[in-house]
Length: 514
Image 1 (tube, rainbow, N blue to C red):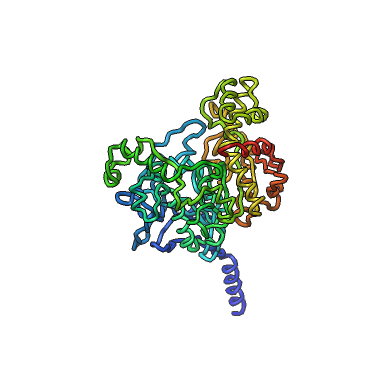
Image 2: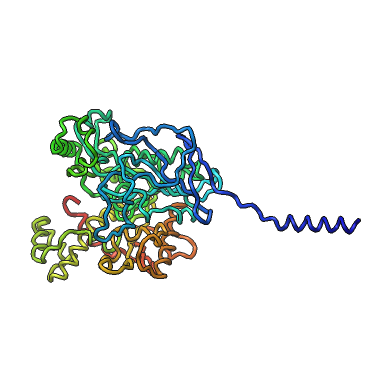
């Protein structure tokens, strides 16, 4: 009898030891302030995603060209497993250096577009993980959060809660008009796309804790027009308190001219007249396709409300949100320039525009031969559009605001075949490395590209976590100092180096209108 009892105890012991320890589950249904949402999980079961969550009412009908309004609550659990419609814009088609992976899906596209997405690896709402909020580019005329290279799964695997959202673009996002100004209640019009961004950031503050995120540790990040948006949010009083850190890739608004509200309103009047709309009601009744076909104001405005003062002036006066900053640009972004000019015409143009400063400029951007002139035009276009705004921000951040700043230069010539081999480290080329989405882009990636992506993701994740990109096993990235500016060169062998363009950028900063 005793031996039987011992045998039973042994079997029970083995049974308990063999039972697997249950793994903590990901978040399931999450309760937002507007209602409960159900998402999905990745194949490995390590990341939960919630796509197509409405953060504002559809901006259609009477809400076209109004600030985003509260979303109507929903009583039942809402399935949020697919991206919401991209903002209304012309149908996406590959062009220049951008293949389909860099563009929004062909459908759905709609004025009803104010949706956001969340990726999280948190196992409970109390996780309090740092939050990265992504703002897409597209020149304020195109783009959307459903672009394949913006998938947040890989970054969420690293312990971030990743949020991306849509904002209105083109005339739907940035049309100014005297009648719109009059009805607004703020004596302003034209920055509806920026107001959408502020509304999404407010949603993050109100809801991200339910997804395991920490509303006190929010980093806003964006590329191209998204990077410009980041700088405008830093400069806008409406966004104060909504984030504490900023990442701007190949885009900053400091030093860029903005139309004044009266100028934008005049353009809006011309726009409505060209469409045959004699009233605001008639303008709102026009089909979206008609609005897209007519050129008009399609970017942010110095409206006195969202942007009360020029961003560079706000920066100089200490009126911007104090942030820790990571900023940079790419080596071959000057390829966005239009048709090249012959060497003699290029020299003449510099003379006409800059007068006595043309001589010093030609020292940095020489044009003694046609090949030299072509190279100089590309480099000048890169420096004026991307290098100078980032350099201005980084220098002010270090010298005037005494806030930490880290500057990079992405120099990896993105592997390619066919016509794409000519584009090198092109505009947007760094984004799949940052998001860990190389597999979403049809390019002949090499092992070194995956190593570079691993390094860049680590830098970005560390910055979101701590405000400092450095970490164990990574090449040291020195903080930017205006006296001895160093940047991190992001190539197959990342390393810090002195900013090679500083003398040229200093000269450009001294020129009129810069």
